[in-house]
Image (cartoon, rainbow, N blue to C red; front, side, top):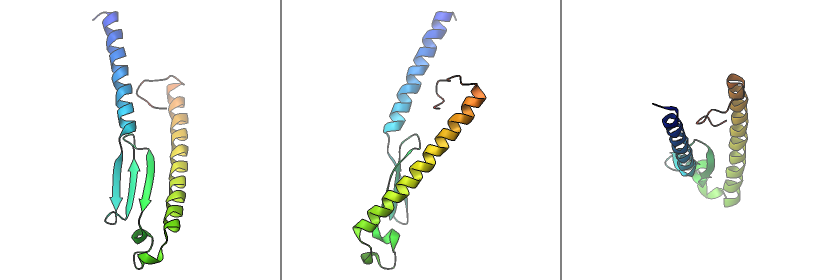
Length: 111
């Protein structure tokens, strides 16, 4: 295999990796608990997108005592905490991976 063929293959692989990453970023994957009382949506890369709670998740013994504002407030603060933790984890991973690779950008490694 000559150098031109290798370069062509590398470019093709890079494009496939980019396309796959975009496809995964656009996926929505839902996880549920407590018979659907708690739903979490992540993208195909595992990044948190949202959480939905029902009144039953907040107060299973008396869901009618839970107002919509309380549910929305809990969804907001839980979302905020998850996003903050995810951002910190991403930055930590980026720093560790850069120290291992010496700052070299390796295609397919998202950091």
